[in-house]
Image (cartoon, rainbow, N blue to C red):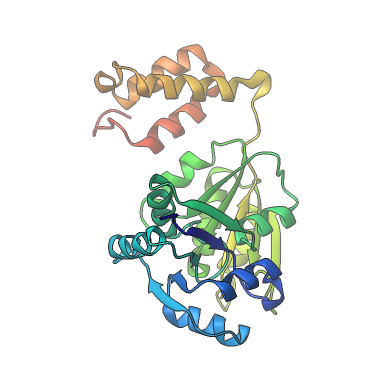
Length: 288
């Protein structure tokens, strides 16, 4: 039996008018929809004024069972659509596990375009778009170390952030580079859509002084690190990566790593120190 197709259907992140005609057609045609939250899916089909298909709930706690259920439907010849709560499925949600499993079984994967907050925020940010890194959600723990590492990257960074942590995030970035440009994209495509941009130092002060915290869904776009003259930053980062992958890495302390690379790239010692410290590999009490 020919297996069915797995459709990845992008849904609006705010404005209902952003639902593509093709997405509407697919959601109307399929009999099975895998969704993060069945309540959200019911609401979606309610305003579509379409009959409710059979819903398969998938989330972090039941993803194995949901993947097995969806695969059995696909291998039985049924088409299955995947939707997230908003935006493109399989991006920053467990839907990618279903994509991996389905592709491994020879199932056709059919993406149906829809809005994605990360791309919309990047496009409207005014920051370079030729190279960028989507980092998903900023971590709750170890944030200073995490940002210390990521801020060394030269490409534009796109991060999802909790509105309650925006002030702390701006402060963490400003501590390392107060002149780094940030753009906050909030409530994209919704009534209260807002863009706030400026240097990290100024935004950190402004956001810390706010009487009311930000609300809603927030995407932070961060300017990449400036390339050092002569491409030194690129070369030392590659050298660090090769060093970490070498057999000698286990025998080197963090101080050893800094000293070895700084001997070759003396002008980049401070950046090397931060990058090695951020990785946190091999660092003991007396190493740095």
